[in-house]
Length: 236
Image (cartoon, rainbow, N blue to C red; front, side, top):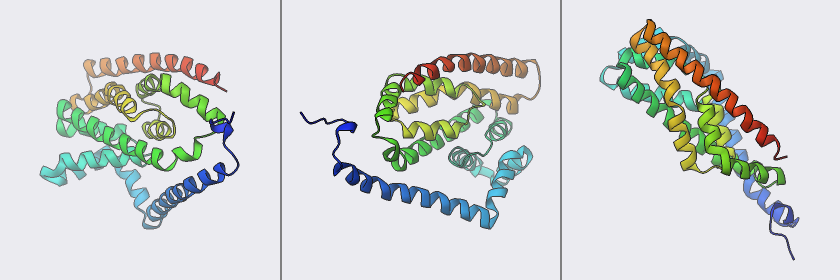
């Protein structure tokens, strides 16, 4: 009986799949190279880094936008989430300072979520076909289908883990978009609230309590995700 799995593909089928994937890979790599080249040649890359890492400059930029400040803030969050590795905490703190804790939290949460979705979509569109198909990828996909949502949720609780990297890595896996969206939307809430609260409330006992709570939650999440990675290593 002919095998229909990835290992059972005929030599004729494999080049055909490669021909379908290759243009997407070339297009994706080319687009990234163009963006990086433009940022480097124009100096915009250094400017973006300075803007996103300087809280006072971010505040001045938003103040100059007037009534459009909320939309500009969301746009900056989307850029931050898609263009790694721009720093996110400074922007979240500015959101709390400029819009207050409640509005700042909602804007930061929505903007980061949109950016995460875009990163996921780009990775799924241009990178998924490159890594899918091998026997090990199939086993890893099975692990992600069963535990991926929990793993992403837990990783989102750890502020030190790159938000961008999680989104792009998730797009390469077989996890469903709805699971990714829900895990991201819920997992990013504690860290987002903590950084926005710092900007909106300033220093004080409550602020330190919020940061301590986030640190304890992140430490617990780190210990928990270690078990998931150990379980994933058995999929080899």
